[in-house]
Amino acid sequence: IPDPESSNQDHQLANGFIYRKDRFKLGKKRTFFLSETPEEFSHGWGEKRWVRIAASTEVTDKKSGHKFYIMTTMLSSRAVNNENSGNLLIEREKQYNNGKNASILLGYFASRPNAPLATLLKSHYNDAFYKYTGKKLRGNVINWAGESKGLRSTNNRRSYIYYKDGEQ
Image (cartoon, rainbow, N blue to C red):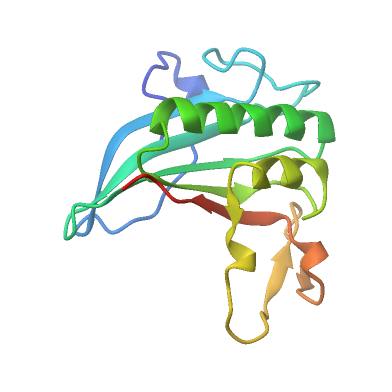
């Protein structure tokens, strides 16, 4: 979802959603910068090299008519960025969704499950990882450099899916 308000092609940053167009319809697409000035092209707290954004939209299931809100991002490994970004993500979810629909926040958060960022996000969302009740989880954890490590410990996670129920 590129920034629909951007007039400079160099500023067309994007986070993507892959979805079935025959099943789902996207509502208003929003992007914002994870920074002190989220409406302006800007670097985050203490960030000099990367510009980090979040993308969000309301999604409607064409079959059932149910709606949900979804937001995705990729955070920095710098703790100060993540804690400030976490507060901003929660603030924007409240602003754009207003608790009316179920909400999903997903992405690479560069944070361990017991770190301050995860604790902050779990004060607003549920961690989908703990909802799973099937057999032992297997698979890989991929870090920012693309290295793959076995999922031997849940403490290796850096990517998350958070959710919260809506009023519907």
